[in-house]
Image (cartoon, rainbow, N blue to C red; front, side, top):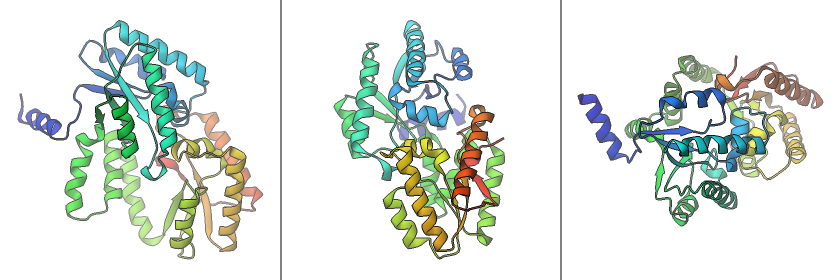
Length: 320
């Protein structure tokens, strides 16, 4: 065994990383599933998403299927893995940010996920939490369902590096974005991030997805308004994205009305308002028709407020 492999194995033990595992939240994606044969028969642990996270998958992967179709496809693929005697564990998405965790929603997602697994006579004892966002209630629920180990694949390289960086008090958010891009091997995104850092020296910008949340809005009014920022703000075209990531309990009409009020408030304060659109999490899931609709709906919304954006930013730098 090479010295590199020995080092990685020791690091693996140190941070309690689960070895020989694959995380497939894209299980319903045909191309992803076609590559599954590579992992079969290799003592790989499969961390699989369930229909409890349909809204998340629909938003992230631009799915056009219904929840029933989504569930049917997952059932077919879990049965295939069981037939091949593969190890199946649970993958769950709870939130994009710890601030937006909702205990009642967590309970529903946990219960629905576990009940779904039980229907296959599967009793998961390990859990992968997507984006690594959880709180004490998540840990309580995991323990309640006898899931003893939280697995976060990002710990393998990114988190130990960030701990080291933290000692030198560097800009953690920027470093983390670079490492996330490295992980995806999207070097163009890395270049844009670096260029964006230099640009921000001259132009102060803020990207706002959670404008409708009262807690976020209070902070923005106190810390950003009147300080010369360019606001790149999401529109109702990305309602599904915001509902999923920020655990919103409002419908699209309520979401739109709150946005209108806050856009108008910013207009009265003479803030520079520009456009922000999320199109997808990665290139394979971009859909031309979906992009066109999002652009049209976003621009039409801006027009109703007599706004003519001259700039826009893609969410997560994904576009084609």
